Length: 638
Image 1: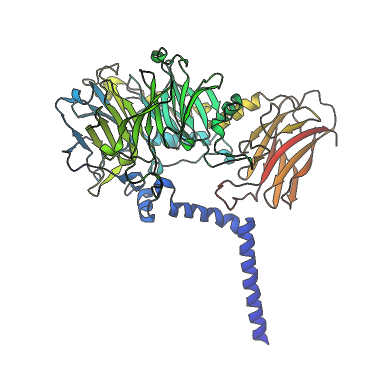
Image 2: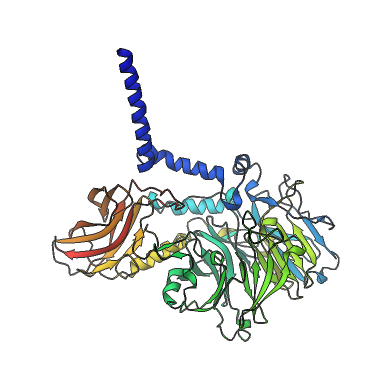
């Protein structure tokens, strides 16, 4: 009998362990709440994402700094071309020298107009994985920029000291980043995004000394504004910035939701929205370029004003022109290109586009002969012409890429995922090629952007004054922490503005989950048609109370819905108010007394909600969800 008891006990332990394991996974109980995030990170590391689907061995070698596998792709060298190595100082010995092909190295003016070629991307320098080089018309590297990674580390450390632990930001090392977005200035300084997205934006001088750093998730592009001293940039949260180049301060911020509201009769931005369920599909727009209309082109584009923004939306194969002041859409074009990048204004009144023509894994409806191309769109009649078809020279970059029409009619093309820069003539012949070769197996380091600069672009003699100390010495002008006020993700910048502009909440009035002047949302998703989700383990509501309030208690009526069973702890101005367990998923009303002794009259009040049971749905949604917020109502009295 005793053996039966032992066997039964062992069986019960197994059943209990299995049951607890199931509940721990389903409801994020211990140890599932600890192990599941670890499991998700391991899964992401093993599977990779998109272009970064490398083997485990390659990822380990990359992340340990042994070999930059995450930055490697297959090149497309042509056997009939006579490539020559491009040697210059500063590169790691583990990589091969880049290669150059030109049909006339000694007389480069026939290929490249008099000037320089600036190339930005992964180079595997001794001091940094990323950077930029400057090539003259004779094919010599005359300068290179290598950011100091310690500047970003120091700035993040200094900024985190000013933040509570919940808001501190994580540093992303260069091994996993792709530098994307750069502009060059006549004094030799550059502004760049350190990744797509990474730690932020930085300005360095000709000698690679930091001038300022702006932390945030900026990505894809930086473009010069129509007025001196400004640039345009965008970030992962679908905000568009106009920035001051001297300090990195945001002069203007445009939210895409504001554009949607300003154009009720144009639903071009709603294509990837499931109206039946009121949900956006993943990555509904994927803005990847922004180009203000230059002052010089105002006569050839009479339908637009200088400074109007030309935008590219990769997810919906669309381009549009936006008035940044009114947020009105003035022009749009769908379907002329596929998963495109880099639309540019041209002096003949047309728009040229880098048409990636991304293939799916089975080449359905594309076939093996589909390559990337450069196209031209007539703004008036929408007619599309192909300027360069990539099949001429195996030009194909499924993501990323840039182009530039040169003064002599040739086209400068950055094939990012081939680690390649091409210059092609109007006949489609490749007359120049830079290949960022890494090894003898055909691997190349990916590139972000190539820019042609005229001979007189720099305001100093770069051919004679190459020594940094002769040109610029601003090393002592920047120090970590001095730019802390710049370090806001765009959503946080918008939040700060919303909080400052809050109006006192009206009583006995239902305040919706969407935009209103009475509530500021922090830690919540963008508003969907009926609600907005909390994201992560905590979320905040900010509001203001009229200073004349004389009653003893204010009751807050919250209309919410939980994602499964949730334990919610609520704080008012850092004082504990209530802890409640909600065991149902349907929409419910939560009544929350707010003692007036805790309320800050005529000042900002903050309700903090903690969601220890927030969890990721079993779907493509990667957010940790807990509560859907529908509306709030402030009631005078109990």
